[in-house]
Length: 503
Ligand code: ZN
Image (cartoon, rainbow, N blue to C red; front, side):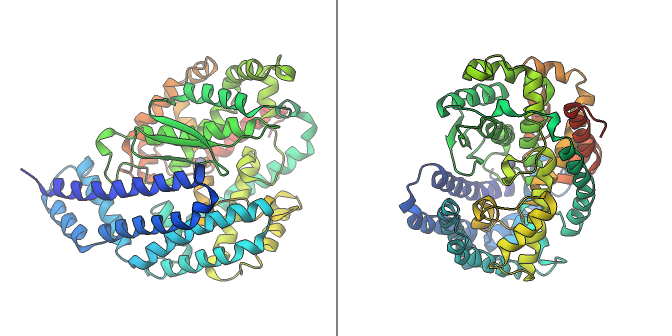
């Protein structure tokens, strides 16, 4: 007998498939597509997005949700079926408020914007990017106008990436984070001579870097039968179900950490998608719900494992074997200290763990001014550079190293950035918790045995997909809400060790 839940599930499965098609077109655009494919790709993406939006936002979805909800009466609210109805209903309530032509226009502008950004960034030409950014911002404002139950415009955008999170909460968390990071960065720049990072620079052919990256992600759980790793200007991870995970990285032949830690970062995202319960595939629960939780996974693998003391014992000999030459005798302590050197720099994705948060605070503050109309797009580069000088003490040399560096605004993803820093905070809480449950974790990491950590993350976080909100998940796993203290304590502990200081 076909039940109301089955009918809802079948309907939503087709929408999930359309989502996978969108992700595949986007993956291709960023890895394989020749530049001139951009116009055609924008049309194709807008069409798929429109069909998918039309189907999902329809009255039919509403009817199926209502019937399934009624059939569930009295069922376990913690079960998969109740979660399916709850999550789909929440997303439907948002989707149905957005006109179909607006959803399609945003998809098209995002696709065109990314191509324009790629060229503008390569030539450091902000003026060429202005019309695309203006279009994205105008569409974001129209999107905001579809909702009237939020306290401020930014809340609407933030809620798409971090459901339930509000601007006021982020502002409070970031104020606390800022008050910790600014003096910490200041103290460490007074002691910059204590750490030598020379071993990170040299000549590292891309082919060898790829070999190294593959060796490391395979330790993490990358499975060649279900994953791919390709090259992208702006590295990202995506997946089409848990058996087809795509990660990307980029190769800097004079500095190996960019690709190595980038690959670990994206593999951390990939493990999340790969670890989602098979029973949730092709449902709205089959991908993660909270981008902050997603980022907690990537940052945990990249920084707490990859740049941790224990795993340096694995990385140092691997680097020595792969590159030889000046790295032939690399010892783990030298590597560990080098990769944790704190020094303000221009590019967010290459920032150390202490300055990283300030890159995010800056973007969060500027985005709010943009969406509220307090800052015009033409004034944006100047505002960026002034704030960068204030927070990180550096003069931005050109827009490619400043306002043009990130892909997000080109694709209309305004409200996304805060999730990166929230991810760091969550990673701090998870790192503390996993050490309580696995007191011998560091011995495993030191031996290159990453299985216990991966399995703990899969069991605690990954397998649930979108079943729980970020606060629900944190409550289950660490018994607390999102907080700044564990991350700051972790950071000070590590940097005290690296610098031989008491921070
Ligand atoms: Zn990430």
